[in-house]
Length: 467
Ligand code: NAD
Image 1 (cartoon, rainbow, N blue to C red):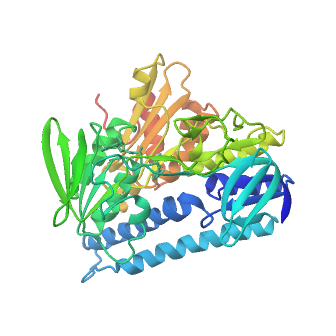
Image 2 (image 1 turned 120 degrees about the vertical axis):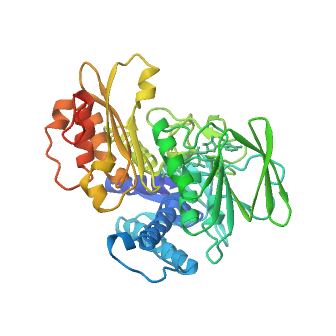
Image 3 (image 1 turned 180 degrees about the vertical axis):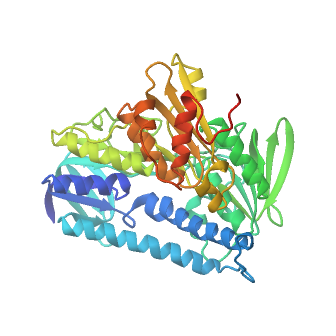
């Protein structure tokens, strides 16, 4: 078989599949090569399965605590196998959706592993045969995989990454120690704690979620500890030893400590998937084993592009990959990019949810920007009270003189949905006046946004006056 395409996309994750669809819509003859299921990490081993599990465990927590809202449930139990079956069903339906979108646009899907032979030729290793295809352009969107640190005992049975934990469909560990208190660490801690598992987090930095607003880390630490999760910060794992269970030995402020667990989840970050991607004697420029691209997402080889987790210095988020993929395809067709990639919101699906966009007050302190900040505690918001929410807040960061919004951070119900209002405002340089002119319906979580904005330059209606 010798086919010729305008664009071959390697990898059908959020970066690759959206780019392929956009390219087909722009009239390109497109092929996608995927060695696994379509949807990438996000759909198969990341965002979608974890958020489906979080949906189940949040419901479980609500049912366990619904007596105080007048609902009596005799005995709340759960079936771990069914929880995972539902997760797999959601994933399966979304996969079929992507395949349907490809079919409807005439995108050729090759199932196999791609090896780039040159700027215009790709070999595909399939189950029974190897084929080669020709193309004008190549877009690499092969994503990333979990990093396994070089700690003695890292290869022991039971020391796993999020990929394997999501496949533990039938058994629930009694105890789980998580190495890394980043996004994956805290999301899995929330899930397994709600399922009754003893959870310990070991984080090397002095706080969990070290890249987030400090107050978010402090509040989340308090909430997770209250739920019984043990959090050890400034702690470095030195080795893991197999005893009756797994013994995780770590150093905490010069002291040697140990915690035992049935399962150890390693969640210390992810690295680019570039293994065997290029033929011998052919490659593109790399930095720390990730692909270097220019502002058009083109690599050092003309006609070869890359987006998503595989690129050097990029933000490893599904929505960032999708936006990069669409921008890359638009620019390779001589069009203007659609997305402002300087303003990527981050979302963490703990309970309560966390989201952030733009700069924080702390970041402003370290720069020359003079800011005015606002904060509102969601405890006094009607909608939050109605749904028995835990403590939370919305914070806003405005430029002091121009009153243009520069950043916002939220830790409250629906924070991941509400962040887009702030992203829209920052991209369009909206000011305090523009944002405070908006009527936000009552009763909604959105009213927390109005109050935080108002508190930046004055006192909001639902804040106790200090006069
Ligand atoms: P991360 O970078 O978010 O967190 C890793 C954490 O591990 C850091 O806090 C780091 O200080 C700590 N760490 C590193 N080495 C350590 C060691 N030896 N001992 C103890 N702690 C150590 O990485 P992640 O949580 O693995 O997530 C990977 C990527 O996936 C991230 O880029 C994340 O943004 C993305 N992701 C996003 C979402 C979401 O958007 N909701 C969900 C999951 C993953």
